[in-house]
Length: 379
Image (cartoon, rainbow, N blue to C red):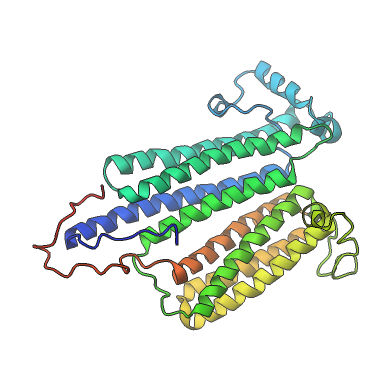
């Protein structure tokens, strides 16, 4: 896999111990960053659900970290917001107090993104300066940092689409791009951390069908989340609030109303919601089968149970969110549950398919006092 790492076959026992300690520290750091990204995704969902994302009309990567410090600044920002369609069409007359409520959520969302960048680059510099990261890993981590910065730019690109005439929300397409990039960044960091933390692929005994099923579960999970992004972007969850039928039909009668037909997948709210339901159901079935199979032979029991609990809980959250017409707390929990399912499935895939660190090249069997030492550091 592209995000796996390898051991040093010629290192002495002492040097290998130092390598393992350093890798554990780096892995813990990466998992902490991943946890912050998960919080960021949930914050982004809450921002979208409350309509807060368009409350800040300026993109100031540095100075934007400071909140308004005076009454005059608050009125200036509120005046900017009053010029966009969301205010005149949705929130007209809610006053400065109402503006402050949506402003603080969006400001927190952006501030958290800046903190993620700091939490990534500062330890990276320290690990590199103290030679605790092998040189082969540095370009990958720098690429992840670049992707994080790009995510900030894509976020503003998404927000700017909500300022168009007659727009009261951001473009669903830009929303999904923003979400997909966040998931790629999150998944890459988790995978790298797992490869550093787990020296042996514990699921090596699993057969090819189980490994293929795990990869299929990961693909289905990702597609379901992407479909959920279009549900969010088109507000498709506000209609057809029944389950399992949609207005009395298994497949809504307006599924293919748009032309060309491909537009229905992303713009027809009936088709968008049905596709999300279908993919979620397929994910539920596939992950449950994977959990049962893993429980019998491929996984540790806690991982198999976590798979089943995460996907069943997320499916129940999705149905409840739909039936209750998308209440903000429940919908936010549903978004968090999606990331949780992705995480557990990713762990399962790594458990089964992640390259065994140090297995491709046998470790030298010469005595420790004659082994070629690479030094206690990883540079």
